[in-house]
Image (tube, rainbow, N blue to C red; front, side):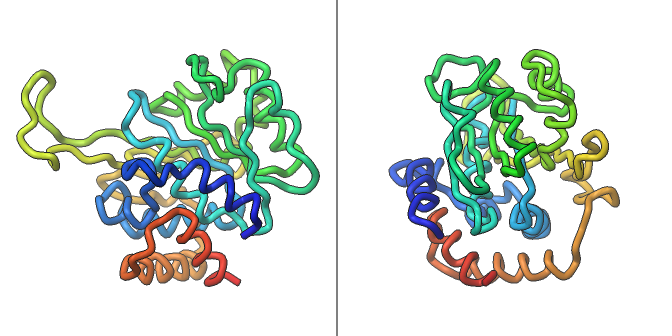
Length: 250
């Protein structure tokens, strides 16, 4: 792992915040994803899939999920955080270009308008794109990116995975929460494209991965074996999991 990529991961992994610093191993243990789905996601991200995570409300886990999968981005890519008014500049070589959020909200690191168009345009140069959005379905994110921000359809399809997270369970609105575990965050929708056609649904939490989900059984089994071994390890940092994955995948 390059020093620059390690520095970016440390910068965004929030080690002082237990919630934001969770790794994919943690998400498996708290049932946000199961082992099969985690292995499938790793199998695609480790081979260069671009992805965006989304949820409607804030605080559901889209940013945490986005961060956990960065541990598995191909190790020949440099990491670059895309910042407003400087998105077009990523430097030489192939990068994983990361947006902290594609949104018109006020935080200064969020991208919108021309910055969003510049972000998606990097797909044409072979860069991997990673981001998160306030959206809870394909139609909503398509409307935001292609409709409001005028991102070309082919560049929108360069995002291979759209991963949505929701809050499952819990007490009815307005009632006092009885237990800490009355709700849990889960991945509830995933849409996939290889870039040649529109995104299609490939996952349902009740039935798991659908026949439309592209699968490489051998690579997926290896990714599952890595995650299984990791679950028995005390290492939970995003940088630590990435270091171990790179060593294991060499």
